Image (cartoon, rainbow, N blue to C red; front, side):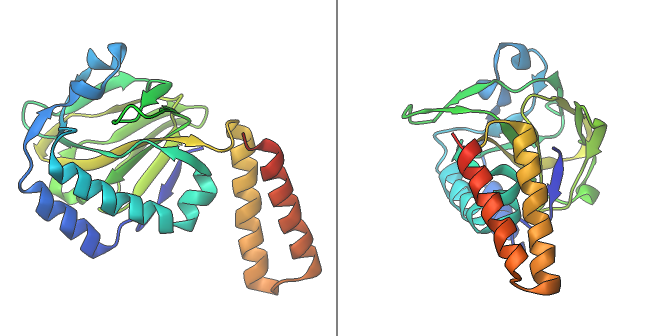
Length: 226
């Protein structure tokens, strides 16, 4: 499932992150790439040791934890702490690749299975030319370029790329999520059911049938969660 989530970050959170990034010391983005991805990755990112990254991670994680649509779509179990990258000048693209299946937590405490990948845009499309996230999967090829504070989630199994940024700079946070529900088809069914339940509640309130269907949703989640 590919899904755009508007307004994950509040405007003041976007501003805070952008202000922090004015002090950024960028390093080669290949430091977090797998063997295949490193051959086509040409961007920059904040170093793991940079104190700015810790501050930005706190803002982003706080936003994710309060976003009900993110929770419903991803059903997160573990979230690899978000990274921040930059595309501009001579480091301006990322060729087609597939994300590594397993990622290590920065402190080495655990491994995270990448079920869902996410890109959180930190500046508006008008600020740069190019820089589209191109995602190829069963839904065909999709090109994504969202406003600042919005996020796109997509299967980590998909082939994807970032097209060259030909002017300006593209700033984003990216992350990998291990879902409580490993099967993508099951996650999609649960998401569709949850969205339908939200609409039914809005239109009809807590009818007995809505309560019953809510029970079915949670029992399926219990059945499918790892």
